[in-house]
Length: 424
Image (cartoon, rainbow, N blue to C red; front, top):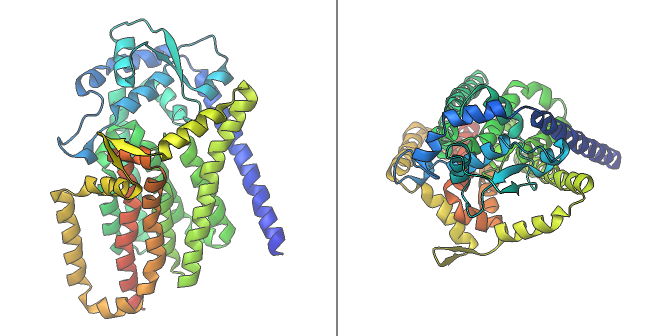
């Protein structure tokens, strides 16, 4: 029976991957049929943002956690407004081209030169190893709105989604855990996620996943396999929409909620963390690999050699300002983003709050200390990711560090959890 159930799960996840990749490609093909003239005019309306703010502006000077990624946003926009007609629509949907200017290596600068200064483009830049699913949303938005509008729409959407998560948690009797969620949100910095499209994809996937879990708890608990498939789909969605920012947040945030809602025994909790992480990882990697396979089949281009080279770059040695960093130092570099007075004051305030608020339950909590294990397992996932992608995380630590929001959510929630357990 167990082999039969395993076989059934394997068949379903393979079918899900096939259908997801076909649907993902179909959506990209559809948006590539949209005219780009209207998009160009709307981008031009707010092009001064890229000119005046520059590549990596900081909302609060000196705080890397507030740094925006206008460079990648510009690349995303260049791909959204690509006017090429020689390529077929399937080729564009797979290779994700954008105009290029010889000698110009900055996407931000290229966008300004192309649209505002009228510099003649003389090449095409392709980025086929990612799905670029964000284009399914970005291209239609640019027909209606300019970049400044999109920033505000991002702010509104993210605010209301977060508020809805908070409301649902209160309705579920999880009011005590609001402090851990809101502290995690401080790590991701909602101002920066609203101002940078690059940071938004994983944030949306994380929030929407949490909403689904909180809304459909009873339905999910009827069959464990529903949890498996749900986390598998989260992995697929992350792979499709994300431009390699802080993907583990879409795993760790809902995974903490699962532990908080289910209140499993220790063995089952550990098992749950392992299995759901594996399903998420299978969806994430599987969806990415499906893009490469489709790319090869349709365009007859061996993208696997390029991918192999990029993997070696992202996981290879890190040399920043002439200094070589090891994997441990890369993790520390990401953690240091939050080694600033406001974050330290927030952390101190939380510790003092728990020491005062839960002082009567400390002895009971100590008896349940083993229940910290599954939460600690979740907390190390972002660290492991940073170490695996050490070159990427070493150079772009100012945004890969956002993945630590899952670690913060898990660690603070774990302390509350064992005090709650102690009251039973």
